[in-house]
Image 1 (cartoon, rainbow, N blue to C red):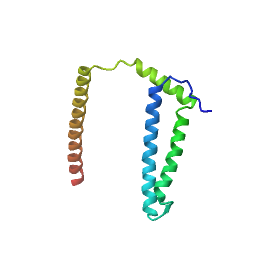
Image 2: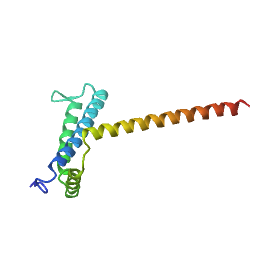
Image 3: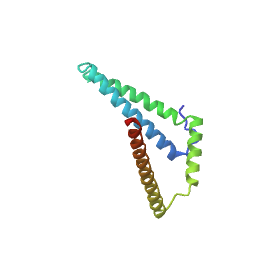
Image 4: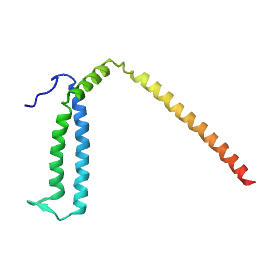
Length: 132
């Protein structure tokens, strides 16, 4: 009944996508439980707090939905293509990464100084104009 589409392809990308969607679902269910417990702190069913029970049911539904989403043909094809392209990327060496990081940080600091000077000039100019 439940057959994996293109089994063995894009496995890493599928796990990462499922983990990200599962983490999002877990965070949402945690927030849902907090909201329900804040509004109805004494509500319980079979000795289980209502917030925990509702959040658990929603999480199970979300887990099933995530399992279905990461098996949709269009989504799986996208993940397979993405993983294939990422394997073709020439990743920088550690030394190249350090050098490029230094360039980026220097550029950011330079632009910050330029903006600071420009802001000072415009602020001084506007104070001078509005003084009259």
